[in-house]
Image (cartoon, rainbow, N blue to C red; front, side):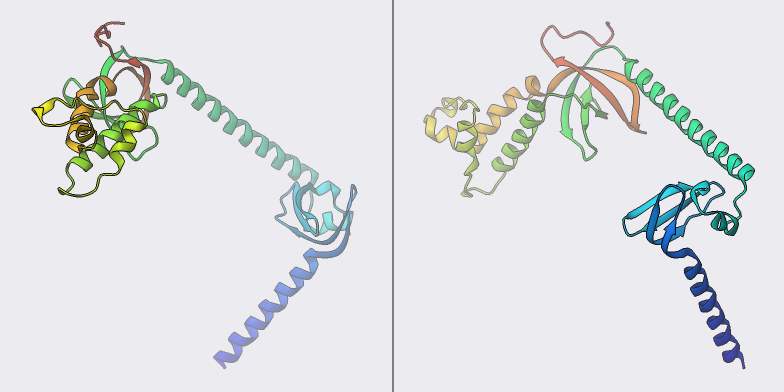
Length: 252
């Protein structure tokens, strides 16, 4: 008996679903402004109805539906206007929130701290994020306008360190290519036993050459903004590559 009751209930639900589907489907739906073929009406609100048909889908005003369908979907002009007013108020509030957020962002971006000399340590996973060092302390920063040559130098230095630490006898085909690409050859007179060709192919010599340039190539002048990308990443604004006459962080 229990199984029979459940079966009867399922049959009833299926019949109701088929009836609803037939009610919402129209082989030819003539509205006030256009005609739709094989149309289905879905997502009905007090003021609008969403129609899907052979050519796609769109949301239309309930007033465009035939009068019998307006009655079927309980269209009420006063309720429709209340709904439209409420939607307009929500849209206005969202736009005002977006305007306030944008104004706050611009204000924070234009609130710059004093210029500081910082050294780029390495890139991090977050876009434009880096590990930096200032006054012997490391922290995280986002510097979207950092010159690409700084990151290129850091990648070259990391690769040179990996090459220098590779097991002896392992082939280092990338070294000659690096010098051909524009890197100056290291000083071949070190240790007094290497000729120029040996020095150019020696990962340790190439590494020492980059290490000698590291401070000048990775130290910049930047100013912190009021924008926090995350709880521990502050946005900075790049100013220039650091020089011997770089400004002190306590001076504007």
